[in-house]
Length: 310
Image (cartoon, rainbow, N blue to C red; front, side):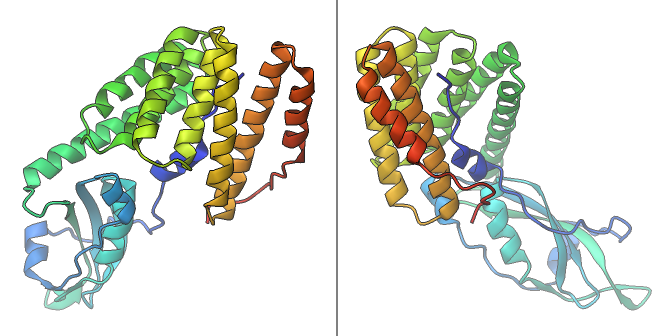
């Protein structure tokens, strides 16, 4: 049995922006001075995913203002990757009156702070505080993942516990981050064969996944799988059997309701893993006939190599 980590979540929070680095040799002007030259700007569109996650904060971006007043070479400095996309898309439409150096138009560098608030009455101080909490959470989560991957499990247990604590400081609507936090701590414990506390964290992961109200969601399927692993490891084989079946059904529904070929392939990988774990449990319970049925289903699943996110 292996506690599997769903790659979709990693993709969500590992989003990177492709942008050329700004030229450090250019003169730098203050944000206040740049604002005096601003001719037109476009308010960034709030990403629907960020809205559903109740994600707020400030994206800080360094830009080059060209000799003609257009924006070039935007580089995100800080902020949520989900919000960065919208911020950079918006900034590229901004226009400035050219800066003059020795009487001639010249390119300069500056930094911008782009706020994202679900309630426009939210002040910058609150957004800054929320952004700092976000940054602490995501930094701790990234460290926790890396330690698990390196099998530095004692350190991972400590840092993943910190991820759980930091997730509690996020807005109550941020259930997805809490799901991930409990999942990661469960994995760190499970891989050390600390099965009882691992199961407790997986059960919290499942409870939060159910509260998200997505009966065909991949997070729910993953949580069901994790709890089933924990139940089996703690000797509760009958309960594990039932939950493996639920996880299989949830992944099949998730597969049917997603258009992305990449995600379909990822769901297929996870379904195959669940079927094999379930088959191993059935053999452990003496049910070789049904175990063989699940193994046959798993071997029939086609996983496409080399697919990239859509």
